[in-house]
Image 1 (cartoon, rainbow, N blue to C red):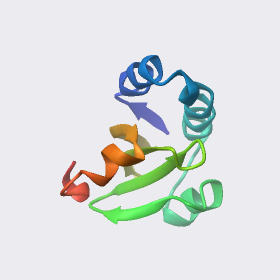
Image 2 (cartoon, helix red, strand yellow):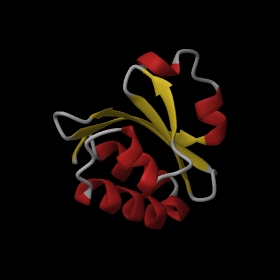
Image 3 (spheres, rainbow, N blue to C red):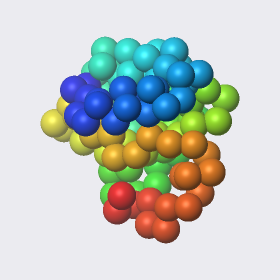
Image 4 (cartoon, rainbow, N blue to C red):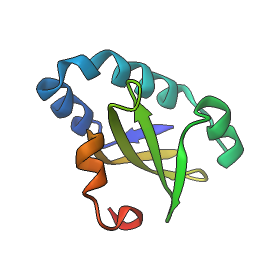
Length: 98
């Protein structure tokens, strides 16, 4: 998968250095993935949640942090829409359209 808006990860890791290693592992798996459908993604990330409108929520570093990513399987893209703390994630009103 091609990761779009990866600068969001880099910016977040500057503010939260304890998340950097976990985010690097996460993005490494995604960048090597050749997912064609939901089941492929779930094989690599069983705890990822589909929330609608092509958005998936990934738990990072023991669920301390979360990413919301728009996955477009046929295009092979993973567009990062949000990277934040669990608390920041809980404040999002419309996760499907972030």
